[in-house]
Image (tube, rainbow, N blue to C red; front, side):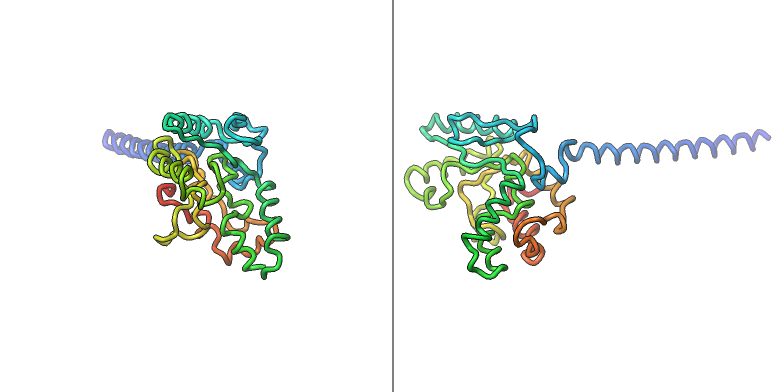
Amino acid sequence: MFYLFLLTSFSNCKKQKEKIAANLVTIKAETDTISKFPNYLTKEYVLGLFDYIKNDDFVMIPKEISNKKIYLRKEVLTAFLAMKNAAEKENITFTVISGTRNFEHQKNIWNYKWNKKYKKLPPLERAKRILEFSGMPSTSRHHWGTDIDINSLSNSYFSFRKGLKEYNWLLKNASKFGFYQVYTSKEKGRTGYNEEKWHWSYAPLSKIYLEFYNENISIKDITNFEGFEFAQQLNIIADYVNGINMDLLK
């Protein structure tokens, strides 16, 4: 009888330990899922399908660094202002000429180029031409509030005199503040958009957002604008969304 009692106790103890272990695994999995991405990060967020103006995490940048109303995430603006102040000590000035753009804003840019600027081109070639410098709505990093265009939208501006000095300063110092050029030279095989010396991204956030995008967004989410049907053929997620500076990839 005593032996049977011990055997039963041992069996119950073993089952209890197994149950506890299983619960711990479940708790860990749930914790990992919860902590991997911030709560506000949703498919709608990374697709630009939200009103950033009414979002408390976004703020309009000061008028002295832009001639129009531009919004960024608060963390990004704080980092940019720190970078701007450091640059000014070396007589370099940065102005933000573009920041957050939601789906509709990006759609207006895309559809203008589709219906007017490049309308004489065959549809597939038209999409490719637009994609040299403009992202399809739902795929633009500007949806996230982490990316900024600085001083000029011309690569040639950053190749001479004042612009070259600014660009060299950014290459040397921007990473200290969390910023990296998104679309670097394509000489080493980078795919997607052409080089943009003006486009910089706040890596501490944008790397997280890109990881979320890659795990949750598929071709079927890229829709509702002219030419969206070419997204799959153009390998838009792999070659364009992820065709970026390696320093911005996880």
